Image (cartoon, rainbow, N blue to C red; front, side, top):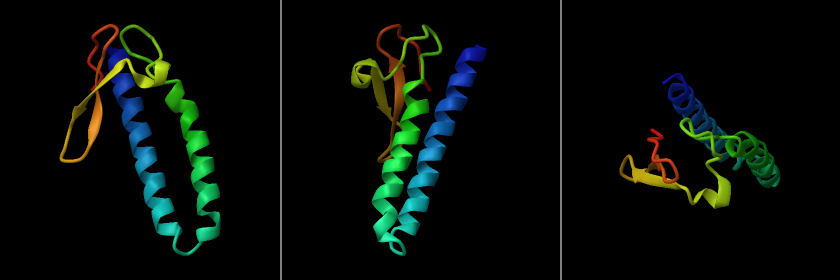
Length: 94
């Protein structure tokens, strides 16, 4: 059960980091439009490293293998989607 708790904590931290960076870049873009593209590019490249390392808590398989086709998403809000289930082993991911 500790593996699932660590997985949930890691995935929430990744989502919070993405939201914070998006908010910061959204606020900074009007004052510095010339560096906005560079900022987004650097952030996406740095964000992909921990995202590609994200593994299933149950079977240990990489979740983004084959473009994330092994992940089932569920609607969690009005416009938000979240990882729901790993299709390979059936583990709950939320």
